[in-house]
Length: 212
Image (tube, rainbow, N blue to C red):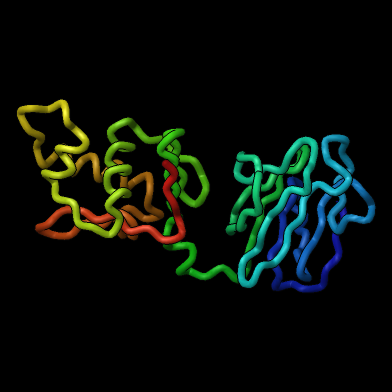
């Protein structure tokens, strides 16, 4: 594998050997062909396999119609995807880790949340997280009301419809605590799942999405 750049401040890929491949310029191509900026000599890699390019302040990963696909955090790239610090990119049998030296504290602090209701999949910073059925029901309910304060009673009725005798506050609080531990970078200082004292809870999202 080879690459050339002199920009030490540029983002870079780290390969399994620990070697750093700087991403200088506006775009680099990755593939088996010697004309590529980063060459991987593997039969599982197409001649022009993938491309990494700048789009304003973002760095985008694209698959170039490769036979075996390009994978970002273990999911196949089907459309251009923005890269984040510590993302894993798999091309053929090689796994690179993306690093961005200029990443800001603000960008790393706020989790990026995505919910796929149909598939029952939740991702935080594009990494899949495993939720129990009640945790998923709570998150889906709060996400449908993003930015709104939801009372404990409203949450209890939505998440435990089978309980006719009522739900205790501690059950809601425990479920909130478990979900927060899976969504937040620092559960002690939540940024996404907020407690509104005396009123209930509110989900705040930025940059994530929800799919029906």
